[in-house]
Amino acid sequence: MASTVVVSQLAPTGVLRAGINLSNFLLVTGRTPAGDPAGVSPDMAAAIAADLGVPLRLVPYKSPGELADAAGTGAWDIGLIGAEPARAEKIAFTPAYVEIEATYLVPAGSPLQSVAEVDRTGVRIAVAARSAYDLWLERNIRQATLMRATGLDAAYDLFVAEGLEAMAGLKPRLLTDVQKLPGARILPGRFTAVQQAVGTARANTEAAAYLRDFVERAKASGHVAELISRHQVVGLSVAPPA
Image (cartoon, rainbow, N blue to C red):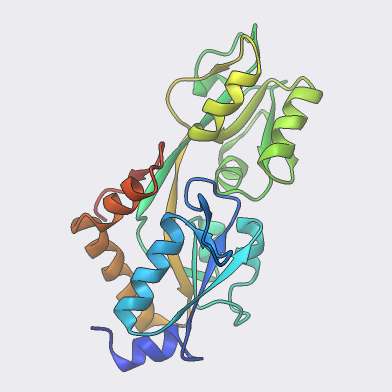
């Protein structure tokens, strides 16, 4: 049972307001009859609200960048988003509750055979701007050039229209995109795994500790695995224990 301090930090208005990233098609897989987002991350938010004993209100965002930008503004109490160092400057993250592999799609005839070969001079990588894997690439790519577009569909369109050498993305999405391009391939392995976590304002120290414990319990009890199964999501794995 959460303490009164935790409840006051996470639900200062009497309602748990949960920021939800609508662009993550693995974690938001549909809509409820009332039109609210449905999927693994909304259900995780609902479980936290139930544990706190307060009502839930989902606060949807079109992109993870917009959700992260709202940190500390009072727009949401918890945010379900990829944990990244750049975001952690303003958000206290739990360990990941699920993770998603990110790799590259390359066009027909590409000489690239491995993830390690992509970071070379002359390679242009299409990527959805401000996604968690874009933030990873920004920190780690040394020689290739990142070509950013707003959203997953726009990144794919850029990759095709400009004849780029690679497209970065979450593997489940790339499995769909590769079917649209004869001869295209998904490179084996991964350059990172996006760690989907629950965050709150850094000032909420007691609440952050509570959320860390909640996520670990949800993984250990099988609750996260049950959510993945319930929503029939392919490409989403329960994150290992912290």
